[in-house]
Image 1 (cartoon, rainbow, N blue to C red):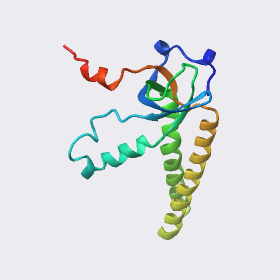
Image 2 (spheres, rainbow, N blue to C red; image 1 turned 90 degrees about the vertical axis):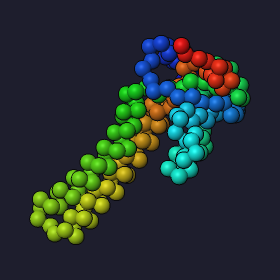
Image 3 (cartoon, helix red, strand yellow; image 1 turned 60 degrees about the horizontal axis):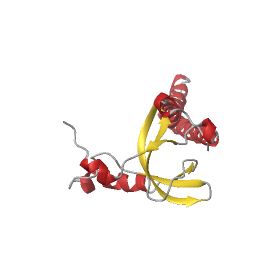
Length: 166
């Protein structure tokens, strides 16, 4: 959580942006829910391809935000996560388990072990990588590096639908 003085200037903030809706206010904290903004999930085939399931899971992921902008329930806002932090989170989630998986299998193979031991070493490397990734993610989260920040208010859905580009 950030104090008002620590908020970045949105015009200088390289971020991956998303829309969120304020669903609850508890003291000085606003609870937001991300909105599904892609066209995926809106078509008749979305239940077959699985996008509808993904969208409903995304909708259920609430996160807190310091309410220094006096948000109200129902407000739509644009939140952002720094691009560098998103890359760091992706590397944590994908690269660490992949490197340890390959490292375990390769080490066992180079040491001359058979296929069974190599497979077990590969699985042990994956388990170790998942554990390390989880610990790293907890560390990043505890530092607040993955917490979305308020960038600006977003127009209501009715205003967005009336917007026309020429």
